[in-house]
Image (tube, rainbow, N blue to C red; front, side, top):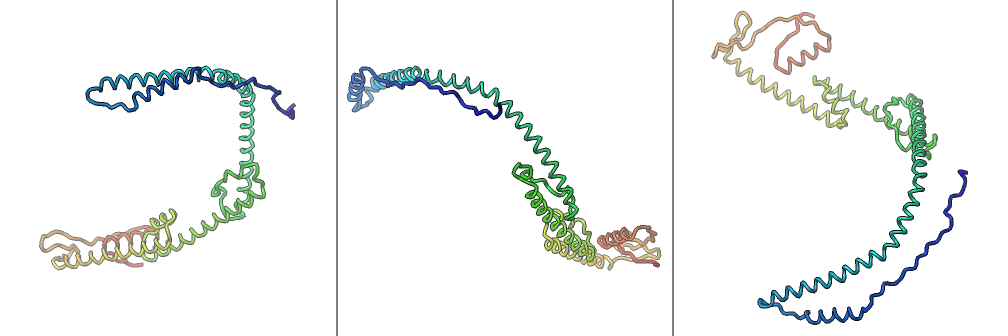
Length: 287
């Protein structure tokens, strides 16, 4: 039954387009021609404005009467066509009552097929990921892999290509991360803000230049601080207790205190960098 050829039975439509003839067309043409001839050379002056407006009103009424009759004839002429179209529409609606549930069912089957295909493709991605040194979660599923026309050979080839690209990008980022980290650490700069920019796609050379600029600015600030300190030292006095007093104001400018700090090596380096950055003098005591 499903293989049955669906076709409409032969049917015909009795349709004989008839001409629309205007009775007494010559009379209409003659009357219109007379009105046109009478008023085409009308000279409008201040004295005949009122009569001119009456003429215009009469001519508009004539034009409206012609058009109203045209619309009436058109409605009557089109009525058989509207009746025919209504009958055809009813027949089409009857067919749609069968087509609509078929469309729904076919749509549901297609969703189920794509779901199965997606699970299959995801399985391929998980199976291949380790061979290319990537994580399955790093591979974005391409919607066209779920098409019926996409076979396993084509899908596997494209997944492999994507994985190679992802791996190359990861390796490039890892190399750049190492380079930026070592460069920043070598000049006592915190590498993390620069690594964040690298992860956002910033160029390596741009970041290295940025680190150089940061170091240069830090040196400039340190030089300015030293100049200020030297200028201030000219009117400062160190007491026997280690306090430094401004001889002009009597204010305690700074003092020396011995602290015992317990920290990891990395924390100690961070603390030393902080003190250097803020101009805090310190010295190593013992080992």
